[in-house]
Length: 213
Ligand code: ADP
Ligand code: AMP
Image (cartoon, rainbow, N blue to C red; front, side, top):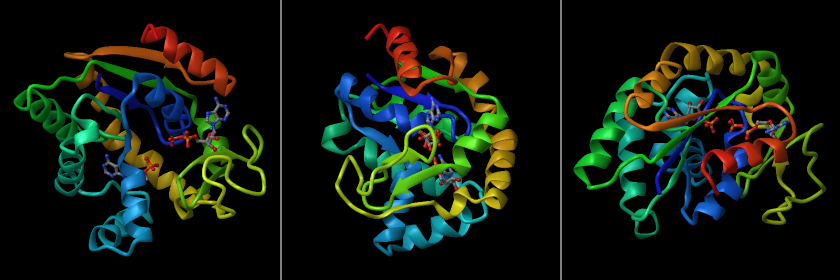
């Protein structure tokens, strides 16, 4: 099953992705995580992506679609993936639908998480991230321990692009380039518009119910 997790930055996509991917039995593919991994490893892709990420802009479509194509061809992704943070522009969405179709695959469902902007700002500025495995926490709503509950690392930090200045750029990019993706996906993929507010467990229950899991 190929499922797309859609929503503004900070809407809870990464938080929900872990259990959902496990339940679906597919890998969690987050383009932001792929870019950050490349940056940590000092690759040319990481450097290039970072020049956009640090100002809250989208990485160019051609670069992003290429890394998604590579990832979707890996053996563990052939039977399905949970895509998080992709597609994020109309050209990316058109490319994805075309690529899936020409590879005998399809997008089965879209989960769109709706969260008002005030809550988004509070979530993003309070987010803390494990720089080793990418697990996310929140200083109030999901406080991290001294070490990461997922991988044991003690490197739980605030992402540079979660600063108040960069967040504004990311919200602008969302409004300008990403919001228009949803109506396009809706035309051909079963789309579930879900309330992303409330307890993390309550949002998870809504997602699982929508997908009949
Ligand atoms: P995204 O992947 O969509 O950018 P995240 O999953 O990283 O968003 O969530 C952003 C922040 O909000 C994180 O700090 C996370 O712990 C927190 N968060 C996620 N879901 C909820 C929720 N239902 N209630 C409160 N905080 C949440
Ligand atoms: P995220 O981890 O989803 O919050 O993404 C962090 C940053 O990575 C974004 O602000 C963009 O700069 C970049 N990024 C992630 N996914 C995409 C995408 N699909 N298209 C373009 N840029 C992306």
